[in-house]
Image 1 (cartoon, each protein chain N blue to C red):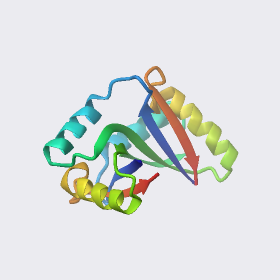
Image 2 (image 1 turned 180 degrees about the horizontal axis):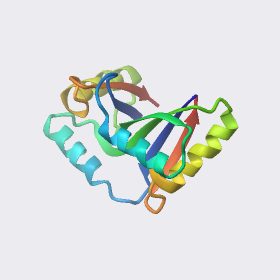
Image 3 (image 1 turned 90 degrees about the horizontal axis):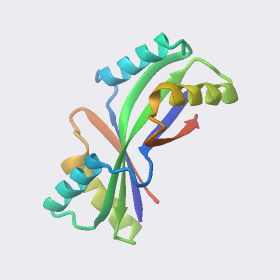
Length: 79
Length: 79
């Protein structure tokens, strides 16, 4: 079973990586962009075949390691 | 209009960040994980309201800046 975890900065938290990318795009004449935010996408291959159990486990991983919940939010998709 | 770009390492390309995360998860007693791969998720707020035009533009951005197409693949979702 596969879990896709998207980790992104909370609204209001400055994203210097996104700002730099936005600036770079503008300097390359891509002017139609209003904002850029950059997050992480973590893909986990799980042994578990139980969807609910997998979700609980991945949530624990996010809280413990994968996301910094002070400044980041995350969402989990089990496939 | 919003574009979500997922950039991830091609199959076969070593992912040290993923390996380190996998190792850390195991050392924290999350033993049910077979593999971890880490990519980027880039969220672009676009001025364009034309979905097809937006897709073309974002694809150009990926080829020019957002992805290193030698070692990375990407997919684009326009919302």
